Image 1: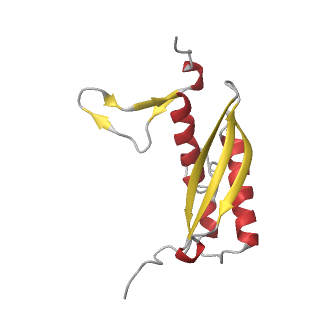
Image 2: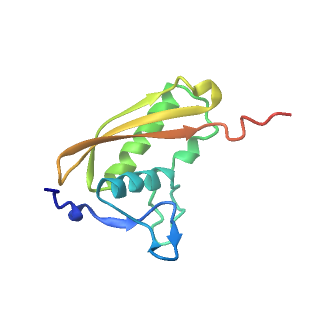
Length: 137
């Protein structure tokens, strides 16, 4: 017997997908929350007209050197954004993998619990520093 998890919400997939038969592809439950987290983390403050405070603002750190201070600032921004803009979850831990830092990439592992179902999940959010660092001249 499948549990009723409709209370977790349903929304458009991101990025939006359309088909002639079904119209807009919808996502629900845990997938809706996962995509919502990616939207929050990928949005800069001021990007949304009707919600100027929405977003994590991670792109402000794109050109900063990768050091402990920058990683701490990014982890704090991730935690704050999820706290304020995704009320369906509680963040348990945020860790940064800096092994790909020389290539300009940080991977943030975010462990979270969905409050209404008390289930644990995690996502890995890639943050790219030094945009255009792969340019070959």
